[in-house]
Image (cartoon, rainbow, N blue to C red; front, side):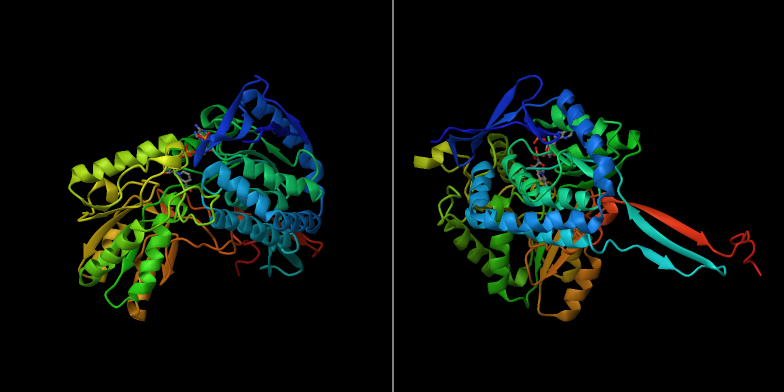
Length: 498
Ligand code: NDP
């Protein structure tokens, strides 16, 4: 194994160690003999230094014309494209997903760099006619200031790009605290931005653990915007801390996503969709399918076929091109998923396949688990209600579309959802009735594209949508401007009354 890379914090364009001098190491979850990197174990002091650097960079960066800001992003997209293979390997090593999926993470960042970069030439405001003569009015978007970003480990390049690139094209400066399990990809993204011409201090990176390095960012009085993706538990805390300081807090949290299969569905298509959405990224996606809600008429056949395919999935080190499913991200996540499997058994669900840690040979060096399917799951069971974040599928049988939708909606979360049917009326009824930020028809619950709003309802989000045109609303402030060229005092509403 090669000597591990050392990653210092990036503050004001300089790479500096944590002020405490402390570090932590990250090991490859597929092979814990492989040290991926040594990182700064930051605390409040490092966060404060990063915020000062971002504040210092803000006046100049916010005055750079938006199309010029966008050009830097477009150049960064080209650099990311050229380095896709290397960055995919880095990403696989740090969080475990197979190379072909890691490549998807980089592709999302390229897409976001292009989309946000070209937004620099749009950033449309609104102009409307006035009620009064000789008066003009419009609204413009303005940068806000220092934006704090807190990201998870499951899409370490994509989620960082979804937040950082719109934030900077809007003219803000950024401090990012990446998930401690996957920080390398954030450095790779920022490296491309710096080479593309991003001035020092516009993006600052502080690595470390959530409570020590993330929370001071949320609490900092000079960071008016926080964008967070992660668990609902942490998101709630971030929201509370932000509310006390009247911050804008954009939250993207957990999911318990349903995939409905009706009796008239193309079962081959549904089968492929379920396998990809339940076991892709080892089930560690906020949009993963964790509940299969299937009509009784086709349940037996579909479930038998899912189990056969799940049992033959090649689980292993994501760096091996033959691997279809990688490890879980860390020991804690492994224990959490195994614990939920125990809960499912105790609740009386039937374990059809998987349910155990994979061991022997190279498996002994990683956090591998067999793809797991439970049947005879009732909607009240914890495995049908709580986010597991692992390769565990709970199958619930139903007798009608109405019952399927009611069960789909009867959880705390509302991120993604899917229905497989060839009945156009059923598809549209479900599209309207499903309580979720995203609905797929004849496609699995994963596969969001960056140019549509992304986010969820209920305990998944708090009303913001990152990605798509709505991303600008998170990272910019509206200003309405009225220009009266009548040369006289015109009293709005009052003069207008008759
Ligand atoms: P967390 O919510 O704990 O972490 C998300 C981010 O928040 C990380 O950067 C984390 O840092 C940071 N953080 C943790 N505590 C604080 C705090 N007090 N103040 C500020 N920031 C904080 O998720 P985990 O990574 O621990 O994963 C646990 C569960 O979260 C999963 O099992 C899954 O259910 C859910 N999850 C959902 C995701 C989604 O996309 N919706 C993504 C990832 C997880 P650090 O990494 O150092 O803890």
